Image 1: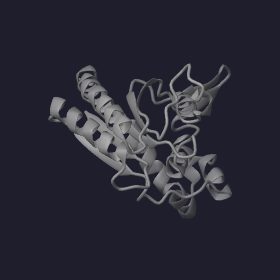
Image 2: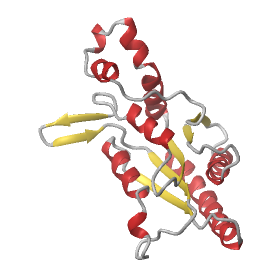
Image 3: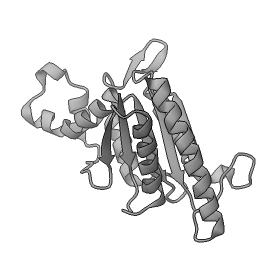
Length: 208
């Protein structure tokens, strides 16, 4: 069994990194023979989508030249990590009400026709089914459903949609909200850790 841990925070000592590490530790304890694959998007070179990339993606794989293969090299590696993983945990701090640029760049590299999504007469069909995904967010404020600030959350709705687009529909969000300095931050973080320890164990058992 494999757990893919993805971090996207620009900060080395961020709340989201601390929480994804706790998730990986809890998962490993429940699944000692499992493998944890770490992908740090802040230190991974994630090129922007270019015309050359688009042309390569939509070309016959058997006819790709050396330059096209090189253009798709990082994308192929990231897609392979997703395909091989049984459980995925994504650390996603909220930046300006949305997700960090490295996480968006990763999404652009892994949403690929023929690799993670197919288009049929009935519409798009995600390929990456049967996997459990946990998205751990850290937010300076609170954006719970039913609150006045819910409408400013461009993080969870987008991630749910784009992950589902490639077949990752079993997605659980764990929010560490109110992460400004103070007592509220510690209480919210402790609550998130409690959820993580419970859910990481459950993910290990259900994936066994």
